[in-house]
Length: 546
Ligand SMILES: Nc1ncnc2c1ncn2[C@@H]1O[C@H](COP(=O)(O)OP(=O)(O)O)[C@@H](O)[C@H]1O
Ligand SMILES: [Mg+2]
Image (tube, rainbow, N blue to C red; front, side):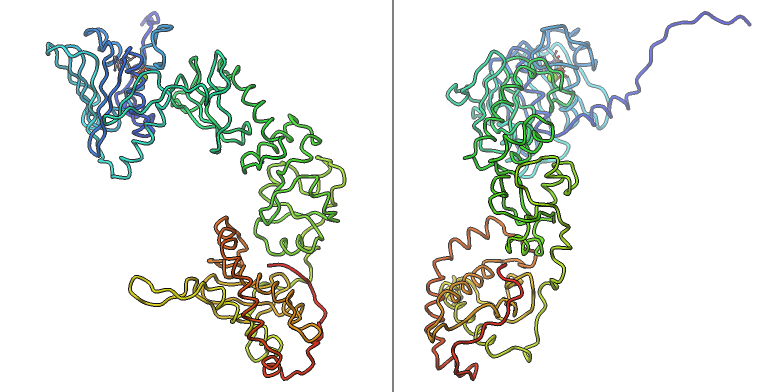
């Protein structure tokens, strides 16, 4: 049999593929509503009204609507019909409406037509025509899954944020949610964009012609703020990213980048985590020379404190090492001034071995690398409790002082709503333990344990009179532990912790005064049986660390 000549054939698409495209491209309901709003603006609407409750979303506009059955066939019934240059501001792939289909039963009304879609039962639509003329376009989405009250509130906020700079007035449940661009807030205005880089939030919000696209972390450019493009940005399919080759963004980016550089190199600004990360990225990429970063604080140590190379140099550390944030041994090593310990997380950003760090970024006078193990050899385990029988009398005296001080630090007694008396800050049991790394520790609720090694460094009397200096040090350590409301052996100090310590620091005076008052010479003798008030100071193993 003679073979037939080739005939050109098209591929077909199974409706199931369309359904998965519709379902998979739909990120979230707020984004779907945004697609609807963008369509309204594209249709020339001068006002868009949205209503939203837990069961239903509606989008109403006064745009040109669908102009006849052909448009419905080509633009509504067919996915992917290409746009003609300049016929839409936001419209791109003629896919966006699918996102609205994905979240609920759709009822569209425009001109003399009504289209209803329920992709859960049929991948297609029902058309009614010859209806009374409807100006513009109205879409009702009966949600497949009702929203919780929290979801509704979230949706309201999110939609308002996404259309904040919309060129067309947008109303949500009757309230206008877009704002006019206030040039005072956008000090840099170019033909491509309105730019505000004074933001406090951690990131740069990008709006494509007034409609939200994404937030770029301050990691990226070292700035936070808002950019509202005045020309169409090239965005990805999901409209949540600006494409790398977007011409308009290529004009905006250097401006933002320069602002970022300006910001992070100003030594008076306290950089956020992301901005510190930006400094490191710039160093790693070669965009910034190490010298330019000398005085910027961007190197985080294992206790969470942030240093500049200059500051590290000024402390004259002999060694530097690396450890996870919160590592108590590292904390110890830092406090004794032996070594600077960079946090593991921070080191990783430099993309090099710890031992190479200050060779690759060769600031003057940086310490030498040494493994942490070597620096901490001989230090014992944290937080071992000691049996009461082994407590020495002088130690018992300090623990009694601690109990006294604790009363003074507990903020007095207050009656609660049930008329029960309670301490403002409940007191905790005081015990003795042993540790080379921690002065004291607590579980955050029931006990505070002091390290024997630490107590051995304190002296209760000096020349026969109470030693205010050591009392004060001791009170500070105790208060520190009392401010921990979680296990202090984790050694994590949150902003809340510092806040609390700050707020309660006033108590230190009372703590010291009360305890000194209590621990008279006679009392001390009763406890210790010693008459010699020049208590010998045993050899301290290691000093300060809390
Ligand atoms: N509110 C509306 N008013 C008039 N026409 C609309 C409206 N919404 C959608 N359309 C028409 O439906 C088409 C498909 O919309 P959509 O799927 O969002 O794709 P795109 O926005 O990328 O074109 C639009 O291009 C437009 O022709
Ligand atoms: Mg669209």
